[in-house]
View 1: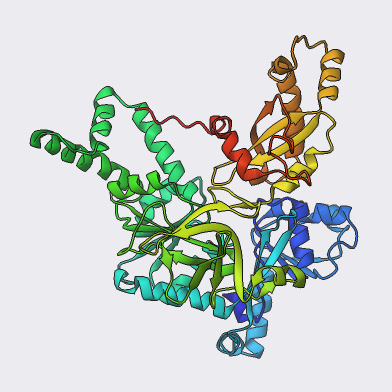
View 2: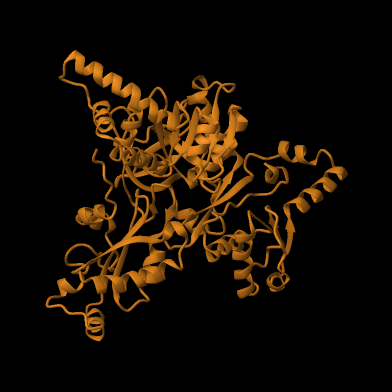
Length: 528
């Protein structure tokens, strides 16, 4: 809000980004001021700047929020001025004394077509693209939310616990919603302390991503599995359908649900009515489970380019497994190939300094989402697959797999390296080896094998690949790291249909063909 009141534009950066990726965004956006949270972020940035001269020609000032100790040796290598947050506020008070109405005048004079933010989203080339979003885009989203939620919200009673990063477009919309709905807003200390903060705030509303509820479900199952037999049986009883059983058994099911489900609700603070969920698809079974518990998750669909939701399940219209119906102002249709096309005031202004990419994102005035979907007979939208290669994890992180795959190409032992993780909570990889190099490695390191299929399963070969994957991970942000991998005995080829004639991966086909292997790297126990 302070940035808007200064007639400036926010460019959010995830704190988990590598120094290289963060400086790319700062440089590409031509940012003049960088505001950092703490000393760790400061050292990450200025160390990189010092090693790459003339890297950020537009950046003049670096502001650090938390108190820090100056390091003249480190700061000597950068041209930017570093000031504390307290110093920034002192400068602001001086400016305010000169022009007391400046802040309010700037807010009131904002033009609907002016930019409110440039949000960078990963492109299929691996380089982030800056989506230019305007005040009109943001207000269109919030106005539609008022239309569908207004009678379900009592501002004086609602409490929202906020934990999404404001660099995520859903978090950005959440940060502005308080000015429209007027609810009480709490801010979580961290994702790690979310369980404690939920009990403190006792929210009635939440904005989340699927990973939020996946982790909660994992904790529930872990707790059940470590419980005495009596509680395990009680949980089994509470999650049974109750169909085709006697009235006394149905009574037992109801009693079990009262006890178990209340305990689960209390884990969310005890008052949570519903949660807005986006950023990635929510498993249908998860939505149904929490609804049965008494917590309704309203899943929506949108992109950074659409300023978050264009479709949404609402309190009166819910279909689990779908992303809801179009919001009132939104028009959606599907192209002949099934791609979802959108027209709306929510659609971004374009990609910053990328006119050709902006043009290619539209078709006859419709924004091309890159997602394949269809409407059911009642108008609920289902997303069936992703037309573009971009991976969206269950935490809502947008990741271009070409980045990791490109790094992997520099290792002679690797032939092919395909990254997987769409709708998952972390990234994995399927790897094929350079057969000649693999055999040479085995000979040099006295790894015994009779068939090549044995070699790719040999613990020493797997250990060698683990070292390479660890080395690849050093170049990646935390959410980009490859957590698990499998080595395949046969490579992907054009002949077996897994590569295009131009030798690009047919990701959708590979994901289906190797589904069992991929699932094995995400195995989650759900036994009681």
